[in-house]
Length: 426
Image (cartoon, rainbow, N blue to C red; front, side, top):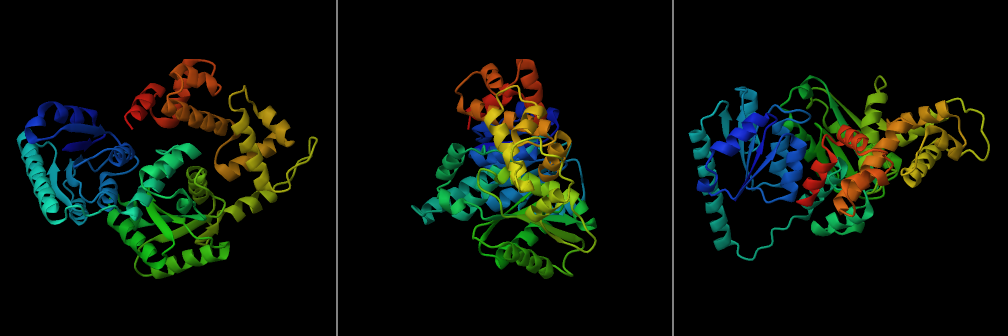
């Protein structure tokens, strides 16, 4: 039996690991995570039976994490260990199936007894299941799809074809059935969603969406909702889906709901395009408008720019084609000493104009995107273990190991060495 401790306080995690008699409680392995995102990765890639989780953590709170676990891994026993004796937190915890709500500081004896009872209950249910459901297939393709898309958007599955295919195969999924035909980002605002304990709200909204639309796979990340659209709807049909969803919530939700959608998406670009949608949500907000076709907005916004004089050669006719040309050029030359001037010459556009429209479309400056893509490829090399860490940095265009480490940590919150070791166990 395995347990996962999730707490952003390193000292708390270390104390629990050191002073609890895990072997005596029947715990084979103790996993630890300091953020909800790291916890998601561990839960998705390992057999976790019990989770002990804090509530207040950076980026995503513990209740959101436990709500995700309830949906995707319902057999995991959930225990909260927090310093916040808040009634609303406790009420939310009950609703997402938390078996015990413990307050810090907790005695090692009390926590040990809680874990012992949880382990006993798990063993009891497993024995009952073996007796009553021997040989029964419990594979759930919908749950596997949600895990797959979540890991792809968050970057836990690297956005390269071989990694995507392998993840689909591990999940028992057919690659062709996973290809998205559109992506919708549902952004929630207002006083009701400003509080930290909004996991039940998100699940209520997502259940409504999946009841309305059979052709979507819905996941929630960063306190908001994504729909992966699986059938080939045109832009008007996607707009109508968003409109119907929002209309169903009138009078039931104390806040505002905004929908941002795109059709130009594939499995390889899903993570990057989800970032485009989140960036668009910060840019586009018109009075009285709640639904935005982001592809059209980007094209229209860039086309309104005053086109500079062409520096020679043919200028791509579409603003979107400019952005795609720049990306393709970076993807082919990231290992070189790449500069803005090189990119300008490749697409025959003035630097300030080019940087401006690229930023409007992606949220990245040209220099930032070069760094982003270099780090993405370096993660691929480290995951494949085809070269040393120093060689990985050199192959993607970094002059020195120290600079590679600095940039890698800036983009991933871990060193290349930490990423290399983490991927080794997956």
